[in-house]
Image 1 (cartoon, rainbow, N blue to C red):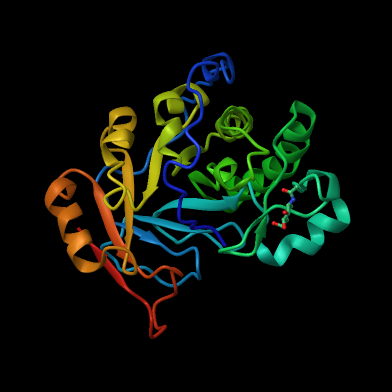
Image 2 (tube, helix red, strand yellow):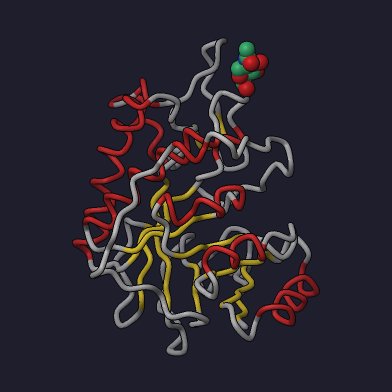
Length: 272
Ligand SMILES: *[C@@H]1O[C@H](CO)[C@@H](O)[C@H](O)[C@H]1NC(C)=O
């Protein structure tokens, strides 16, 4: 799936040098941003009818957008979805990251193989695939894209770099904008200082209260930050603290880790 506990401080990429990558900025006059501080619902673990009070719904690209909402389309752009590994191995084995022992490099938490963003040629080949998904999101009626696992370099056995993922993200942002779609920075607060240069329009930040990263996102995106805190990390007290700190200006939700659909016994959802 998606949400990966970050390896805190394990790899702090060099900011110097990044500035030379991704220098192409894109302008996108026709795209629309999600409403600031609008009620957000994260449905990537399964789609369901949102509350009428919800303004923004985020769903997997294989699900239809929610009628009458601002719709964000989840695409796993830097790792495979677990159920697409066979497809990748069959069609694009060269784009899956392997280490020098020949083992696939995995995000073991979610059972996903990292995509190999290490060369310009591979990034172009990955973009050719993900861009097709982005086109599909646009055709289905979505307004924005959430490309997940931007922070995959932190799980790469040091085989990928922050700069390489920045360059990959720049390709995807350019394509989203060409489709008049907004695109979110998902996690990787280390890239927020260059988020506008990459082309990101807003941020979806997981657990920024827990990791004290929220200011890093708001410094770039202002009130265009959509925050998710989880019930298995910090619990209700952490969510309440986030709401006290930023709930008046930012859209903050509380969810179960697997982002289960409404009706599941483990479903958790609060908003402030
Ligand atoms: C390659 O990855 C496998 C699986 O994580 C690991 O057991 C092995 O030690 C790695 N090899 C190298 C050279 O890092």
